[in-house]
Structure formats: structure tokens, C-alpha cells
Image 1: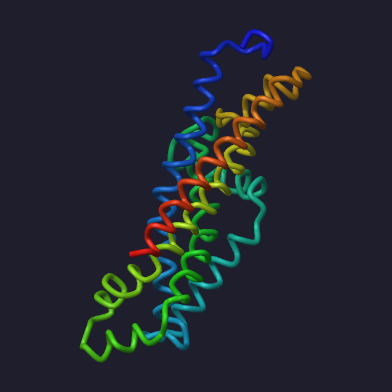
Image 2: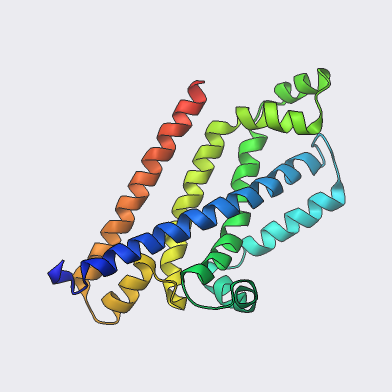
Length: 219
């Protein structure tokens, strides 16, 4: 720890901040993304509840936000961040751009997962008189569970990389640690340490995601 030039307390704080940003923004973003994904699947021209204008509107919004690189998006919505949380910097402030970033990303992943469900299952549900909500809740989501877990895993890893970039606005976390104490002070051991920490995080997240996805598909 001494060779890194940073006290252990600072390392633990950076780790906690990173985990906080990842999982809070993932939780909020996944809920919104699922709503958007279900809307896209239901209202698509070949969906079970085709609504062309709703589909086009949601599809356009998702594509528009996805096309903006995170670092630009983060700076662009600073006024919105200030309005929502009262500050433009800090760990809590970083949640706003992180959520905006992950929602369209997850929405597309979730949409693809839902579209993988066998059409025959949906047709059988309709033949039994199931409502739109019942088709989604009891047929589509259970069938897509394994794929959805992998989608969340991919989104989590993407968020981890985004939190590192969020260090540019003083969000804290491992990225800010590498930038402030590593890059700016030419502290190569610390930069290497942060890279190792991120690699470990990714390996753990991917392994856990693969485990639960495989478990869900065996059921």
C-alpha cells in the first residue's frame, strides 16, 4: 500500500464509490430500460400490440441517446444533473449521466433478449386468452430470463467503464483515483493497481452473470 502513494482508506473509499455508482445506476437504469424494451417489443409493427407512432418515438429516443459518447453526454447534461441533485460534481451527481447512458444501452439488449422468445409460446398464450400483461409477465420474461441476466451482466461491465470516465467530473471512484493520484502525479504503480482492480471486478461480474444465466436456462 505504501508503494502506491495512497493511504488504504482512500483505496477503500474509491472502491466503495465505484460499486455505489455501478449498482445504483444499474438498478434505476434496468427498471427504465425494461419498460422501454417491453414497449418496443409490444408496439413494433409485428408485435402483439402494434402502435407505430409509439414505437417510432421510443426507437428514435433510444437511438439518439445511444449515439452520443458517454464523455460528451456527461458534459451535455450537466444542467440536468444540477437540477436533479443540486450539484454537478461528486459521486451522486455522476448517477444522472450514468443512468442516462445505461438506459438505452440496456433497452436494446433487453429488446433483443425478449425478441429471442419463441413466437409459438406467445401464440399459445394468446390462444389461452392471456392479457398483454400476463403474456409479458408469465410467458415472455420467464423464457428470456437467462438472456436477460447476460444482458444485465454486459450492461454492468459497460457501467464499470463509464464510472472510470466519470472521474473527469470529480465523481470519485477508481477512475478518479487513477486520474488524480495516478496519471497527474505520474504514479505508474497506482495506475497499474487500478487497472488490476477493474479487471478483477469485470471477471467477478462476468462469472456471476454466466453462473446465474446458465442456472436460469436449465430450469
